[in-house]
Length: 330
Image 1 (tube, one colour):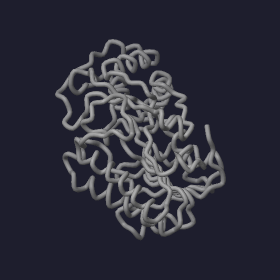
Image 2 (cartoon, rainbow, N blue to C red; image 1 turned 30 degrees about the vertical axis):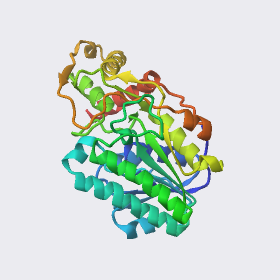
Image 3 (tube, helix red, strand yellow; image 1 turned 30 degrees about the horizontal axis):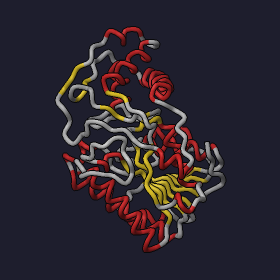
Image 4 (cartoon, rainbow, N blue to C red; image 1 turned 60 degrees about the vertical axis):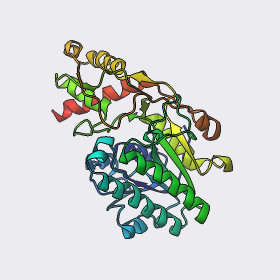
């Protein structure tokens, strides 16, 4: 795993799932971290493990306010922009809010970083950008028409990053995340991701609901792979690797039906009753794609990315964490 050491780094959305895991790793490597979050979706409990760390600073604020962004980037050399309003269904319900946060907020952060002279801007892109392109595996230069307001915002981010590099010289790298899962991912709420939501439901002796027939497939990516990609993106000194967008995934896919069986089997080792729970099916979810599989050749070639976790060993770690955490909450 690559390391960044003794850097002054800003993580926006640091109280979120990916942001908080990233902060934990960066602090282990003796970096000075500023976290910017307004806690609209991030959780304060995600920051508790390092809230008293001498190298950690929290700024509670909104990326939609440019002055807040300018304050957050003071003295910063690397920005990890993880802040966004996620969820395809939420964006369909409230496209104006998703656009405001994900585009206006993104441009504010780019502007503040550019004016401060930030050297590297690494941002969370999304596999939703591939839209209606059915070609598999997904290759970075072949996208289709977006299927949701959320997907549009994430593609616009990529275009803004490219323009800011061309006009102002700031080096940007976008990471198109594919269905990330792992510890600290919120299992609650209407827009919870499928893995933590299903784990929580099984532990509550409830039947999870799969949207559609369950044969839709995803390239589920464990959080440690995502941390590796972020560290590589911020530390690479290859000119040819900069100002590009990369898929961050495993390069393998699994159907939701199979995924659910794996979760059920692994959870049964902790609670045998889980094996007897039936799974239900509901209507297909608007804006979803049928299959998603990433080509990670570009990240391997230019960033030296090598995913260390596949779905099953990632699930093993995640399930152990959720079992302990959810049992403590009870």
